[in-house]
Structures are given as C-alpha cells and as structure tokens.
Image (tube, rainbow over all chains, first blue to last red; front, side):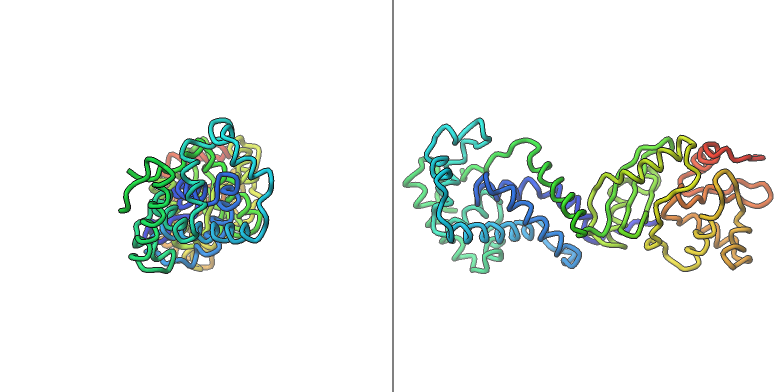
Length: 170
Length: 199
C-alpha cells in the first residue's frame, strides 16, 4: 500500500511530541498541583477538535493555545472560590518549595508570575514557559503583538523589583 | 537570559499522556487504536477501529511504523492512539503457536480501496486454516472468473495480511505466487499451518 503523508500526524505522535511543552507551560501557569488535570483537559479538548483541524496548522502553537484556555478556566474558577488554608500554608513553607514534592528552584519565579495581573501572567507564561513568539502569543490572546510585548515588559518590570535575575524586556 | 522554564519530573509528561489515551479510548474519542506486535514473521503494526481490525502491516515491508500510521491517519482519521490491543495480541500469539485456526476479531474493511478487492479478500477469508487456493479459484469465488490477474493485484493490496489469509492463495500450475510481505513469509505462514505443499 502506498503511503500518503500530507495529512495530520496520528494523534499519538502529536501528543508525544508536545506533552512535555504543554505540561511545562501548565506547571508555570496554574502551578504543579493543578497542572495534571489541566493537561488532561487540554489534550482531550485537542483530540475532540483534531480531525477537523487544518492540515497546515502550527500544531505546537495550537495546543498551547488550548492549554492557555484551560489555564484561564482554572484561574477564573480559582478567583470565584476562597483559597484553601492548606494551600496558603504550602506557599508559605519554604521546605515545600524544593526537592521532595518535585518543586524545583524555578517554582518561586512562576509563583510570582501567577500573582501578576492576568494579561501579564498570560503573556509571560506563554513567552517563557511555552516559548511562543510574540506573534503567536498575540494570536492566542487575540490582542496585538505590541500589546503582548507591553504586557510582557510591564510584568518583567514588576518581577525585577522582587527577583534579581529577571530578564530585561525583549 | 530569560525566566527559567519549569523543570519536569522525568517520565511525568509521558505518564500523563498515557492517561489521556486511556481516557480517550474509554470515552470513545478515538477513531482507531494501534499496537506494535512482535511475531515470528517480524514486527507487525496493528490498527483496530470500533468496527474491527482494519490494518495489519509488516513493519519492514510498508515503510515502518510511522509510514503505516501516516497512511491510516490520512485515509481513515488522524484520531489514532496507541493501546494495548490485548485480544488481538492473544489471538495472534495463539495463531503463531499453531493453536488458533480462525480469528475471532471482526474485520473493518474501511481501508480496502474497491468493491472488487473487498470481494476477493472476503473470498480469501473463507479459505480454511492449513488449506490453499489459487488466484483462479478466488477470482471465480469473487464472481469474476476471468479476472485472476486483477485478483493477484487485489491480494497484493490486502491491508490485513495473516488474518485475511492471502498467503493461502497460490498460482495455478504449481506456481507459488507472490506475497505482500515477501514469499519467505508466505512459506513460513503455510508451514505454521502445516499446509501440504508440493513446491
């Protein structure tokens, strides 16, 4: 049988190729605790839409945009309910911030990013955890590239006051 | 420099991905599930849809796992995930051990290109374990006795060798005939079945 290779890759290959990037993005944007569920929701939603996707789509930007929307759902739901006491305790406990429970040294950066205003948080996670370009971020957030850059600069400015090694705006 | 990308526990993303595929299969979101199956005649790529077995490819004869799955994705649906396919594995294992004479898993003919080919392959399924037939007889059984050359081509395009036993079809007048996975495999399968060959 002759192979036809012009279509979308089998979903399994797409999943294997992007699982790490999506998880890394979600760990940054919703935190390690909630990233697993958001990961499930992201790829199940992706699978539902996958057969109708355009064959020339940028699959990486597409799935990270879905992950962004799932992160958004998470933050909206979180804003509607009080923060559980246990979670506040976790965050205040430096011992919980490295090693044993798998939280690495970068955890503190992203925890501060999550505390930024929503648009700044979104742009910084998509730029630095998902490694999307500003153009791809503008598409994902349905804003202009200039607005995405401005939000990133504002966010980094705030972070630089709190953290020593944060980059100058790109 | 940039904000450091979060580190991941090794294997965690893969474990989560496996949970996605299991859930997708459970919720009926996939068009097909595939598995790589080791066998005495080489590695096989099996693709099963909700209807049944749609593809069983000799990995080395069809361009490799990726090429086989790309083809299925393009012709059937890209919503394909890897899965255990335990029932199929067991049946194949029993067959290769000489302990299974017929396969119980239904067949999905979705990847068969023409009604003529499907007729030929359906006639081929009726050849019993350990028996053989000829291109001429299969052409007749498929309702086109004159089309025995086209029958050879139809068998050559069989997407489900072994289970649709095109290895049991020989040339007329003592010729062995070709095979979709190479004649060495045709001989090996007939030997497993104990078919009496005057060749």
